[in-house]
Image 1 (cartoon, helix red, strand yellow):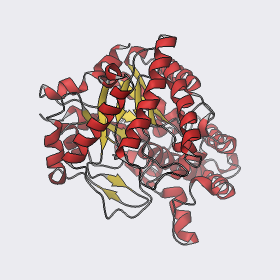
Image 2 (cartoon, one colour):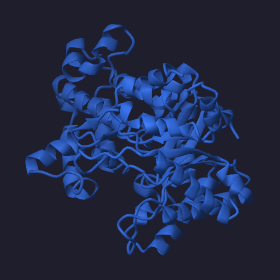
Image 3 (cartoon, helix red, strand yellow):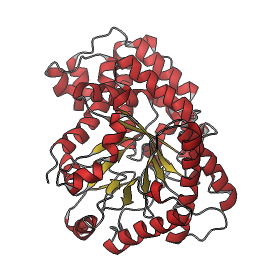
Length: 431
């Protein structure tokens, strides 16, 4: 077990001793996002937690085309390129459960989920979020907590068996029954329910019982986090920021559970103060994903506009037009998430906080368009007025000499800017 994984497992003990600490969970498979995270970790001498979601990476390849073993090699290759020490790397699996196959009957969906978590355990992922909260075909719309916990324990059986056979490190588990939808809310953000202390206690106990019934007491002892709803969420154009008052009772109840910290999902687009308050109050694991690829898209679209002015002869088709064509030709990743008129949907496709465009970056046509853009701007020093016009959020850093006015540096800086908000929030958390 790496030193970073051991430090992750100690988060609850640190909190119980009155020393709030936390970690950003980078939920993305985009190579530039991962590179930015590892570069920041190297600079700050910090651990980096990178999580692959069940839809991105699974035994069938997910939408990235990568299995868990391939994802590990992919991340480790980037780490080698940027000089990030592997002993500071933690790999996690996010929303591991039947979600990719929920259109199937529960038995078949869970068999596929079992094969997936077996692949994650075999690849040595040491943080496993067990998420069986979604209904499968034939299930009631809202699953009883006992069903969720039983299915989670069944997946833990698979992971534990694989760990013993393969000699891979014992994983830390994340449990929960009130799990936000991956990638942001679809419905209007007007009825968020903050988890109650009673529901928190019930979640822990129902999982403890389910694990015990399958002989997994030792494995449950490695459960370090509970997913709860602290009152944060984001949608296509709205963000609900963290307010401490509604979560006061929930935070107080955590004192009764020294084994756990909270894992906060959907923290994208929160303020630094809000993130700091989350960590201070026990939300030690802050998950972020769409905000990072949103920042990536901001940079790439800004560079596309700049290239249209500086080197138009080198661009075949502007990047936004390429992405629009791809999203229209395969609308499955966005159509049910983006309501409204045709004009409103077009805005959402490119600029939504939910950032469903992230599903299209791995496509060969998108990769070719990004490569063409980067090649067109290779060696070009971008004038500050154009940085100010099209990448205004980075102009102060360029002016200060902290970021080179070059395409690749600006792209990484756009992502790092978000990561820095998280890192600074964690560093300033208060007991």
